[in-house]
Image (cartoon, rainbow, N blue to C red; front, side, top):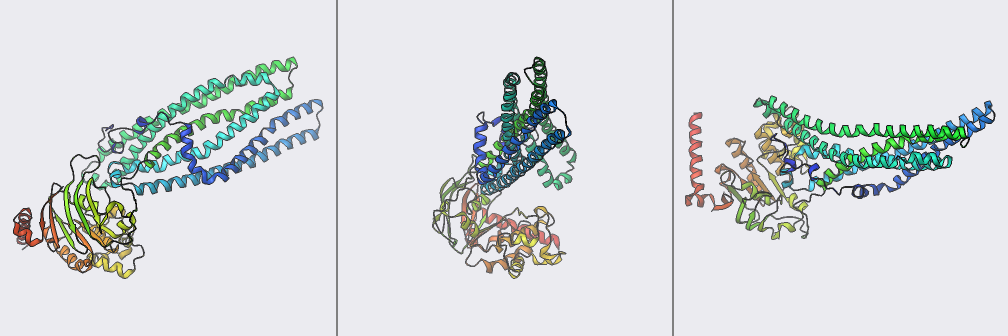
Length: 610
């Protein structure tokens, strides 16, 4: 990893940052091409926004010309009526231009906010499509950074950057045209500095893009560390690791600050340089214009108007630097966002088969599975037939591939080779919506949302009625706990269900799986945090609900699965034993050894409690 801090850097693989991976060809054309699809739905509003910019700029440049006419008229003779007339005219022009400027900002900024909303929606929807293997290597904090500050930077492109770019170009065209009308020599002298300005913008723009990427990378590291730290705050305190964590945070914060300071230094160079260029231009105008007035080739009114137009160019010149900064930061953020949007899910819904409901027959034939990026197979040569409505028990040592096997059934991962069919249909041909609707998984590591207990149980079935809710809770042996909660099923469980015990979380997860009313129910060691008495009670209540359902149960305690229609023993990704509880005991293999060992442990435990 690039960082020595052992929890940071996973999101970029072996230490590569987005700044290091940035393609050299990422320019204006590519940025505009990627933004265009988001702009298309708002093209009418955008056109109206451009029209308001045209009117605002066209009316705005009339002011100095009126000033020229007023000075020349007053030179012929000063009267109160002339003063009131020209003063009122200048104020009126400013008011009208101000109205169009307001409309310009309202329209364009509203469009940018709508596009920001659209990007958020598209980004989140895309994240939902990505496979578990993507999240195995990507940090949550980094994804959150791209969804917040990076999207905000892109919004600044489609809002202020585009608005002020058009405003700057139109203002410059109008102003320079009128400056040529007033004095061609003076205008050419001022424009002679344009090549120097363009070269500086080109050089700084490339550096700003690179430093923007680096700054956002460091911000992602910082965000990831904070998110992980807060999620594991109880572990941090339990092991007295507050000081090392503070040290890590300070180091990451320093890296972010250093990267941001490099960017800030570049940005700080823009304003002084543009002011310097403008100051040189003003000095040229004063010198050459003064000589022209003395020589009589230029009127005082024209000189004042020319100076006003030159002052009017100050904002476009300054805006160029600001827009370049906005554009490069937004382009860097757009690059980071598209790095996620361009990531294709490993599992694609081909929906070849139009099956509307599963019956639950599952068949593995010579299935091999290797996790992405791994070298050793998690499963090797799995041959297994699970008829509809039957139960399968899976047991084996830690790391033998039990969870890997059941993770293939809801198509969370793609098998490496072999064949996996449900109801005789290849898994890849089944619509994911139908498959995952009819397959429910109660994992060992139960995840609960920061929500009410009832909403966690009804997660897959929001319209579940109260009677059914209480029924599945009772089967999961959760009713007694709920009655002790102050708000019953409406109790707020906290982030990740932190306010519940391990056993309560597992039983809530089981109730959630039962509430989904699946055709295939997978219980992945979901009784590990439940005592044997509660487990026995749950199994007694759950068996009547398993009729006509295909049930797969993983457990370390053999007593949990000895009632299954068939049982397999997994070792190092291979099925080493299979049969019923009785036939496996008679075989005298690993299953028999574990059964007798667990009986001995249970009897010793009973002796201790006497």
